[in-house]
Every structure is written in structure tokens, then in C-alpha cells.
Image 1 (cartoon, helix red, strand yellow):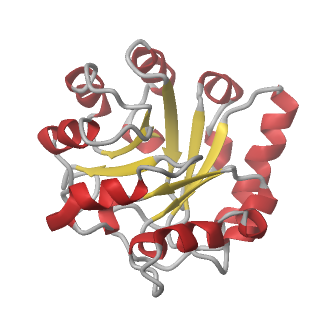
Image 2: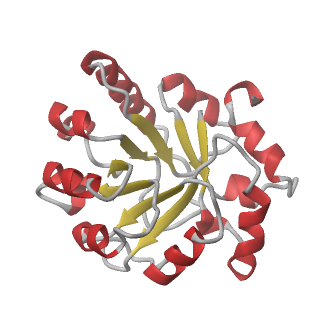
Length: 219
């Protein structure tokens, strides 16, 4: 059960300090929300920042590309030690081809779907080829949005298909996740939760405590 703190909610003026605070955790990924100002209206991490972050942490880097041209980032970041490269189903007409291309450079390759996208569009071939499926529980583009419970049936459906296909792709959920809804997501079949504000802006200012609250039964 992995927690992926989203650096979008971190203190950007003290990013190296934030990375150091998380360095000793286990079962943790660092989530990078890469937005291009076109596929979504916001603009975030560029190549130089991504590469700099990769040099300052040993935690697995989980990059979520909310961009119109994921194939460009596959090429331009192929030398960067990203653990997981996720792009959007809605951004391509050839998801299988892009998954195969990304797999030549990255250990794990994921595919994301927006709240309005049916999981039925993820064919069996796509699920078999994917290492991760990211279910968005908010509209991509901005942090701090309210969780959409409509994502839970999608998670259950994907978990059932994962079982039927005999595959082990990760089901990741991103958007509005906090200690009050995380248990329902684990129960539905998710095994990786992205959390921004509920980690970096938790009232306790204690990252270890905030992360523990998100885990199943506080583990």
C-alpha cells in the first residue's frame, strides 16, 4: 500500500528541505504533477526541475503527465531516472503504442483517466500492457480540489478486471484524498494513493503522522 505525496502541495521555496523530510520513509513515491498549460490550464514542473529533483532524492519518482504531447516527454526525459511515467488516455489515439515506447525507457508506465472518462475505454490489451492505472478523483489541473466519490465504482471495476485478467497493475487514485476517504479507496481495490494537501499541509505539520493516517487502519 503506497502513498505518493504530491510535490505540487510542497513548499517550493524550500523544496530540497521538503525532500529531505520524506527521505527516510518506506512504501512512498514522490508524485510529480507535470502540466503544460494546454491539456490542463495550469503550468507546473519543467524538465530542469524534474531532473534537479531526481538528483536530490532516492525515493521513486512518479511523474503524472497532464500534457497534450506525452510522446515528446517520453523522448526528452528518457535519461531521467523516473520510476513511473503516467500519461493520459485522453491525450492520445494510440495508447498501446505509447505504452510500449515508454517501457523502453521507464521501469513502470501508467495510463490515467479523467473523472468523465469511462474505464470501459481501457481495453484488456491496454490493461495487460500497463503497470499502473491512475483514476482521477478530481478534474486534473489544480491541487486542493474536493474528492469526487463517483471514482469508487471505477476502482472496483478495475480491481475486478485486474483479478479476471490475472494481472497486477497498480490502481492509483489522485485528487482530494484525505484521512476521511482513504479507507474507502483501499477497500475498493486501490493500492496507491496520491496525496498533496493532506500530507504537506496537514494541521499537525507532522508528515509521518499525516501519512500514517492515510494508510489502511493507520499502518
